[in-house]
Image (cartoon, rainbow, N blue to C red; front, side):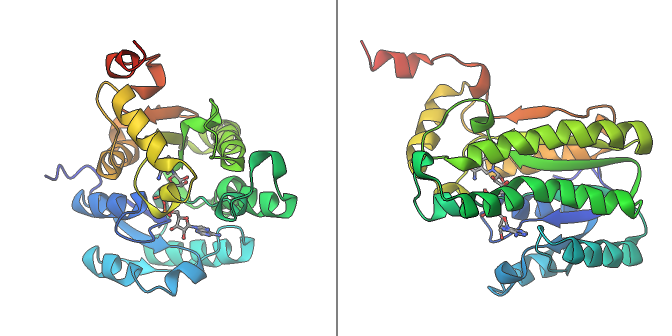
Length: 268
Ligand code: NAI
C-alpha cells in the first residue's frame, strides 16, 4: 500500500547488503512511497553484486563509500547533489564490531578491533553528518536517521563492544542533532529496533536467545525489518517535522516491559 508520503523526496540510503537487511526493506518502502535515492555501501560489500537487484527494482544508482572515509563520503555527496540537488533524507543503517566477529569476549577486547568497530558503527554517523553539513547538502525540514539497539541502555551479554558503539551513536544523534535543528532546520534521530534476523543481527553470540526472549517479552511481539521500514518512511515524511534528538523505540513495547506473563509462568 502506498500513501505517496515521500513523493518528491530525495536521499541516500546506506547499508543494504542483502534482502534481509533493514536498509533493503526500507529502500523498497521509500521507493513505494515515491522517494528517489542513491544506495551506498562499503566497496567490499558491493563486490557481492547483490545490491544490483535492489537498484534495478527501485530505479536507483549505487555509489560505493566506506562510511569511515571522509574522501569516499565527500565523493558520494558530490555525486548525490549533482544528481538531486539538496537532499531530504539520509539513512545510516551501518554496524559492525570486529570483536564480535572474531568472538572476542567483552572482558578481553582487542583495542585495535574496538577502534575499527567504533569508527564504522558510531563515528561514521558523525562523519556522514559532517560531510553533509560542510556541503550544505540538506533541505530545510530534512530528516537524518540511524539505527540502534537497546543494548545502549541495558546489558545484553554477547553484544560486546557494539553496546558501547550504540551508546556513542545515540549521543552523537543528540549532540549533532542540536546544531542541525538550530542552524539548518533538519531533524536527527535514532530508531532502536527489535532484534531482527539479518547478517549483522545473527553475527551476535546468543542472538537467537535475544530474539525469542524479546518476542515473548513484547506485548506486540518483535518489530520486523518491514515494521522498521515503515517507521523510517514516517520519520522521513513531513508528518514528523519537529521530532528530533530522540531515541525512538520500535520494539513492540519491549523497552517498557518488566516481565511478561509467559516468561514469569516459567519460574513458578
Ligand atoms: P546488515 O548486516 O544487513 O547491515 C549492516 C550494514 O553495514 C551492511 O550493509 C554492511 O555492508 C554495512 N557496513 C559495514 N561496514 C561498513 C563501512 N565501513 N562502510 C559502509 N557500510 C558498512 O544488518 P542490519 O541488521 O540490517 O543492520 C543495520 C543497522 O541496524 C545496524 O546499525 C545494526 O546495528 C542495526 N540494528 C540491527 C538489529 C538486528 O537485530 N539486526 C537490531 C537493532 C539495530
